[in-house]
Length: 109
Length: 113
Image (cartoon, rainbow over all chains, first blue to last red; front, top):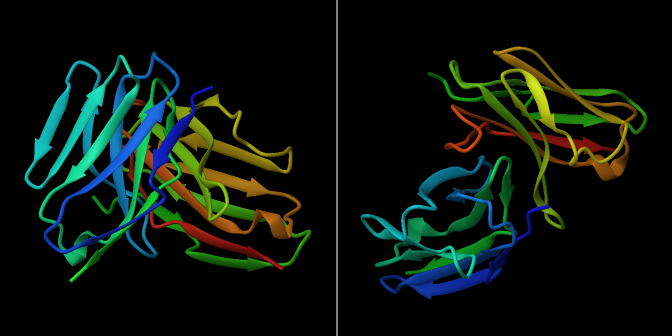
């Protein structure tokens, strides 16, 4: 079955710096790659997604890049703010949606 | 739309008791997922339905777990009998298509004592 590895597990940055989270996956048939943000006591919420026919997608301070050949994709957050502090999950779907282990991002003011 | 609605939000039960978690997906969505979240294992997919039909239940940990979707607007996850290691947050999510944006409910925090 699909295996998704996410790194790092924790990430601490200063406000205004950039944050990068990386994921690798195993199933080459996967073609949908969303990123979710989970705040304390809430369910995960989609922040950006990318499909396999696209290499990069950007939405304001958030961008995702995908390398299908290498089977990895990354989340980039620029100009981080304290409200970006949360747990971020990558996910992969070739049918069912499988999540990475999560990255706890802490943005220090 | 109110989003995905799960009930109850919190459940505390004694070992051996039956537990039923409920989910109302977003109207019009035809895929529904049940996940379990723990610190040790993260977000695990238990089962997912497409058009009310179970497609993949390979994540269901044991026969003590069962899920149903009798119609497009309701699903249940049942644990019988419950055990302390079942303590976790259980999420339901729905989407327009299997490979589309999944919207999550607020989750049910289950504690089995």
